[in-house]
Length: 238
Image (cartoon, rainbow, N blue to C red; front, side):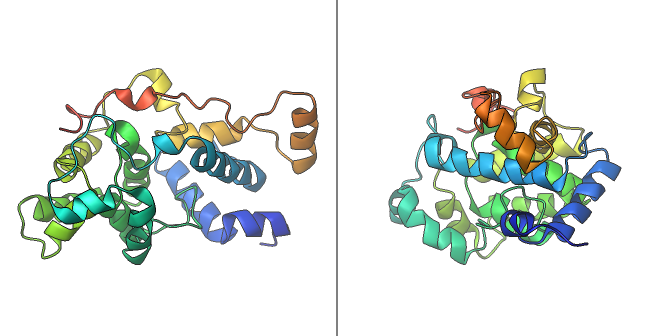
């Protein structure tokens, strides 16, 4: 399929993204079908989040940093980023998550810190790929020390109890999903379904987006429910 230059620039591999989007829809993970341009707006919203709401990414306000020297150093997010990139735990050119395969999503979940219900977004992607059981086995190996890289991955995620909280979150996802309020489920910061619903509510074309922005009816930070992640998964982080 031929895509406009701006779709290729923002989605990088738009056909792959759209294929995974169709898979999520077929699996019942999402209930809308945003257009490529609407997905581009979702990417721009996430850029806005990283630029202006950095406290919602990679932090744990109520968490305890692990006592190891590596974890204490990696608590500085600027220092942590090169290691996350080397681990393929973050994907700078996949802001929707829909470009990634299960292996990349697994690396992200076990290596990049998520706070509270922020697990849900990636677990919904994993559910759409039928990859939750394999993820659960990998997390169990980290939790009980069988994984040869367990100590490093624990330090890379910085905070005490991270992988145990991830194991509980995967169990909840396998059982049908975490207990969430309607607002949390629709929050584009917390869930894939919320992010896709946000996209589907946006103007359908660049021209319509520009007109809405000029009219004052379009904002990239609309529906960003700050603080919605306060509800924990099965007790949340220690």
